[in-house]
Length: 319
Image (cartoon, rainbow, N blue to C red; front, side, top):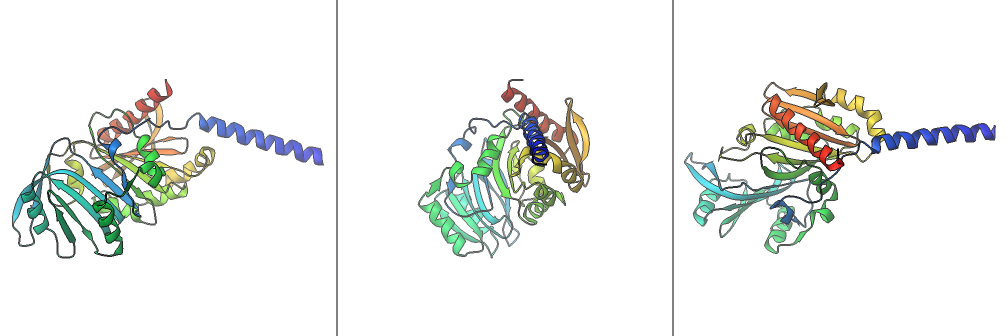
């Protein structure tokens, strides 16, 4: 009886190791460093559930509308935001081309948003609470920590982004996949991807790191889907599971079903696709415990972004 038990345990151990090795060979390979200027971006030393840095290649014209309806235009050089909730509790720091633009932008803020001006920079957010105090203190003292130390999971996700999409990297960011935070934030941007966040949580993909590819021309006065359309490209999101690859593989069918994805073939490799209200398109590709998905305003653009992922992974593997 003991010999039989040992034999069965041996078979189980062998099968587990073999399955793990098969999935290990399919693991996503990270790059070695972030491209400039993102390689110089450190994290403000505060608690957060989301963050973003936007660095247009050229100052971007932003149309703003004051509460009295008066419209004007300012030029943005850089935007950094951190949030507990990207809609309800956030702080942002925007650099403009000159102090006059800062004054125009501050006057256009709604009454419930706090604001501080510092030369050519405007800090703003809501609500004005203890967390906002910690953010302002961190920015004022330049109290920053390398992302690899402060948020190692988003940092690895950024390194997993592809090397060569045709459009330039405009922004980096991350958001934790807690409760409805991811789906609700996408909804605020006009991208209705209901069920995506809960599907990712099935496989314990609890952080979504993303890169925004494109270039802003004139930015609309409201943060919505028009902002994404204005980049001319789309978003690549990386979500990595805390489960081992073989367990993610076992759960993958449930994730695909919950996210309402359909199987497609992309460059001779398996991928998945979903139309988001016929306005946005999502294409996904899994490597072991890592899921990539791209969102763009056309199916071809979404496929091209995932194609860049496939080509980048092949290059990093030496294929």
